[in-house]
Length: 377
Image (tube, rainbow, N blue to C red; front, side, top):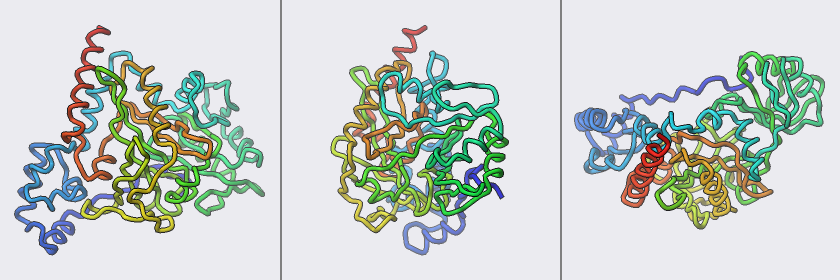
């Protein structure tokens, strides 16, 4: 068995089972559900899983209720419209976590500290270079390098990510409780991630964040827009990992949760278990049953300010998604995503991203992107 998560878990919905549940609970009969699915698929590109997870069936007019939402496909199209390829954008740079970190640190922004980087041919002068399995094994065999966090240079959604606590007798202790052979872990990293693997210092979450996320350094997603007048915060969403998970991403075992956060105050406005339908909000954290509604997160306005300052330096991008750790040392940039997917906001807030509050700002940002594209030729 693989030590690291190498593929995303399959979480396909059993459509027949969900249709039966919806009918039994008095929302809509199977015929009406089928009509909804066809209409939403043809008109707006929604799949069956989105129909059930967004709980469109619970609305009196599902197709009308979905008009402000974007599907997974149209969400990517929206982000591509705001940050298109081909106008000297930094899409490739943002995909490389090491280079992104080097750039941000050189500009004075707080980032995770790189300890070592594995790559067969590339060398990074700011961190220990690892070019083969033996180098990885030597690095992981040194107890002074622990605790540390490992992740691929250019993959997302927590694929290959791992939190490493300690090493002893050629065995590595992982944060999920496993103890694995050092040689096998080094071999897996070298063979499964030939495009590079990054080891960083572990970040410790702020005490107020730890109270609802547990020990995992879960990230705050901050999405910013370049409009005709400024860099605007579109939304902020705090991720909550499942109990026992090492990361807050989709590859974690069990379903994570998302909390819609007021970016001006840091208070949680609504939370959603991502493994359940949007019928009821998530009221308490899976870590200690702490009430989530109106819970105040630390340093959110400061985190948003950092993201806006970074985005201001990237004129080719109309939208950027930042993953920020609200650490005990303050906000730290973990990653930047040039094409954020907006489902996390829609599910956490239980509202469409193109609602009246945000659509005007989004359309203004699209117009500004087109103006800049024309100016760049």
